Length: 201
Image 1 (cartoon, helix red, strand yellow):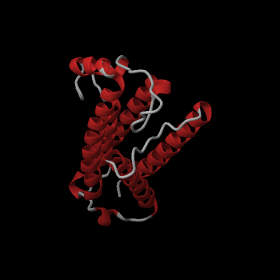
Image 2: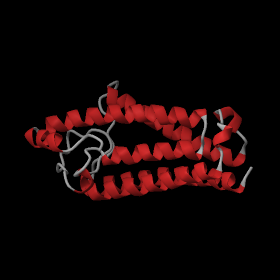
Image 3: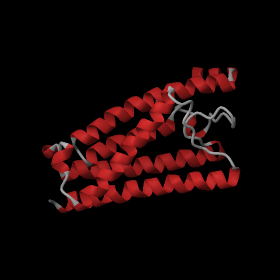
């Protein structure tokens, strides 16, 4: 095992562990301050409900796999793409993961008290159309997809490829669902926003 491979192996375990701690702490802090949950699953059995649960399953699986790789050689079980385990590719994955985290944190900070995960139809906040939302309706989802690509490059395998494909499909479907909900909540204001700002770029 090369030194770069060993570094990336440990980086992934720490990275995804810290991601979990970061968002758990953030959600608890917001709830304590504002007295309502910023995490929304939607109606049981609905598309967005399944999106959320599927995302949680993959997120827990990724964390479990990354931590297990530090202690055990499970790469053969992951369908490792051996030819891609080269330093430039692995390092590129690390860079994309760090960029993704930075962009996600920036967008969420910009949203401030209006940040939600999932569709919140009870606590209607401000329609944000400035800053990172000036050029894309879904900058947060784009940042998440960047991280999914980074994970695939940092751990090139069948496992990470499945995570990438499923993650992309779920995010695209969730973006459409959220835009539909925002259209109901904000009416003409959101229609005007749709007309001038693209979904992605």
